[in-house]
Image 1 (cartoon, helix red, strand yellow):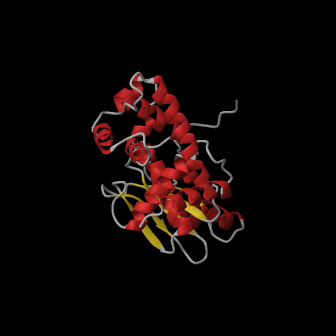
Image 2 (tube, rainbow, N blue to C red):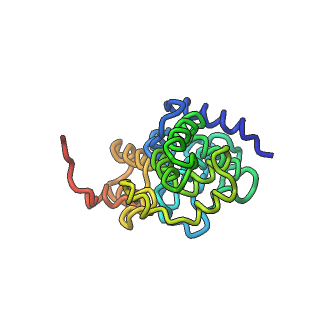
Image 3 (tube, one colour):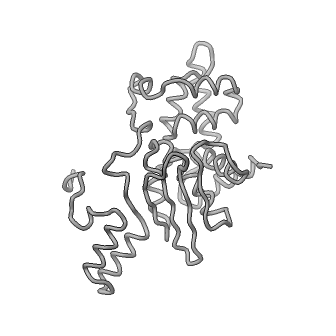
Length: 253
């Protein structure tokens, strides 16, 4: 049986351990890149998987994120995989596309991700504020979009999180999940990036430990330039070999 109180505490403790406060929105993508020994791989994993965590005995771990899914879902999947990285004894775990599905440990990881990205106190404060501004004191699609934009999560993840509070019931949640989100978000003045997958040029990328380890080996003369290029290309980092990053040159402002 899922212990929601325990998962909430675990999420709060991990935020503290990783240097985050107890309530602010988290840039979980940047946070992941600061974790020692962690390699992050962005790759289209198909229609059924949103993420994967592979751990090793020597502390060199890998989290893979499905880059064909929306940015909001990628962020939720990263938090889900944090649960497996820090609290699961399994060496390999996968995250399904649908939230709150599969084995109990996967549903628990989903709930952990919800608490990690949307801490209870901050969520309650924001939901109460938005609800009071609404004439019928309910959370409509507009309020849900403001919540998911604030915390940087997918629409599905936000509805799932609110469903575990007094703010939404099953009927309201089902109705919200069947409404168009992207156009409404844009009409409210938000960017639609949260509801879009990674750009084609960025769907294959590797960051973190693998890259830094390869760079160290090369700088210390332990591998040749040819081997270094091979390692970078295997990690989908042609930009580090040919300098063909489509972001353009450095800008100092």
